[in-house]
Amino acid sequence: MSELQDLSSLIRSNTPLIVIETPDEARVVDLFRHLLANVFRALYRWSITEGMRRVDMDREDEAETAPDISTTLHAIKAHDQRGIYLLLDVMPYLGYASTQRMLREIVDRRGCLEHTIVLVGNKIELAPELETLAVRFSLRLPDEHALLKMVNDEAALYMRENGGKRVVVDKDALAVIVRNLRGLAMTEARRIARHLVFRDGAIGAHDLPELAKLKFELLNRSGHLHFEYDTAQFADVAGLSRLKQWIGLRREVFSSGELPVGLDAPKGVLLLGVQGCGKSLAAKAVAGGFGVPLVRLDFGTLYNKFHGETEKNLRDALSSAEQLEPCVLWIDELEKGLASAGSSEDGGVSRRVLGYFLTWMAERKSRVFLVATANAVQELPPELLRKGRFDEIFFVDLPNHGARSEIFRLHLEKRRVDWGSFSLTHLAEASAGFSGAEIEQAIVSALYTAHAEKIAVTEAKLIEEIRNTRPLSVLMAEQVEGLREWAKTRTVPAD
Image 1 (cartoon, helix red, strand yellow):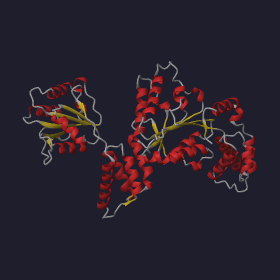
Image 2 (image 1 turned 45 degrees about the vertical axis):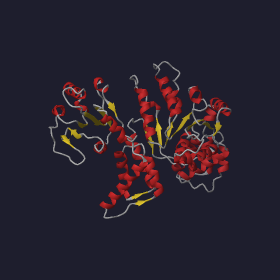
Image 3 (image 1 turned 180 degrees about the vertical axis):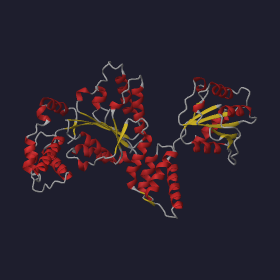
């Protein structure tokens, strides 16, 4: 059944109290106006600024009552014709005992006709005695056809306001924009579309990053997600050939959202490895590889001392991520958020968080690709590592000779060092056992030394800094070697 048919059924069955939580008041009023073609009732709208006025399809009368809600409810009770009454943002006034009593009497039809009261607002919490009598009705989110019409309407508005100047439209980008506006209420989608159209009079691929940012700012009501503005490309990452190939095989399916027969949607990967070997950069590159926004969830911000709040924070954060689909959700150092899941010292909070997180991982239908990184695999709950939680578990090892050469090249070019006379092969040989982060810091230290001596950095200076550095593979040789041995038979090498 359509949204209009569902609502008509509620009115025909004389439902006394309907609750609609939405920021889109205009859409609610328009929906009820269309409903009157099938259901003969008088339609009224009330707000604290305008009072109550009749708003049937062909009329919008002067206010019949003062803005006071008590006076309005008395007038509704006294009406001699059945009506539908849309009460906008009435929540602040439902806390008064007299208001609740009067509303209860209208809903119970005590001394009045079979009216229908519709409470409309962003968030509506009712007293238990009213909640049991209410029917909560959810507006359906606009589909792609409605969103495309809305974007075209905004383009037409731009043309009218700019002397007939037409909006330049890239049809492929328009299709992606409309697809990414799904999950938003029409007013929210219109706000974003208007911004994209009016800022430059064009709709193109250049609008996609701005769309992702605006959608994130709109939907991140939990405050526990962080929008990563600077994603990476796999061209910026040395090595990791298997991971790059794995993502490349799934890019089209994930980005299009259309599943070929027999294929499940890609859900996520766990990146284990030695510290400083590029797991975080790889997570950013996954988002760049898929061509979707990257949002980061910090588990540490979820925990709250009040009972039930931690679990609620996690639900809100994951819900916000799902509304941002398609996107990559990055959880860095996952073991720090879930390592205590086997402990009872926190009253079972960690167990409940883990349980909800595992359920979400298994049952979600949204296009949210999870990338989790971890350094201390022994601290992760075993339930998280069993096959099926993640599509794949990759191990990011210390870079090999070829990857180290590429890391030197990338960082030297990034810092505008003329390295034409350097031997990347010699540098890679000298830095055996170094992580990518340690190679970067050796370059930084050499640049500082060269700056202090007022000379250009040289290959000899780089090798000197490398020899003065003790990498993690030496300082914590036993732990690093133990992790590498553990990963040999349990994970897929990322390179």
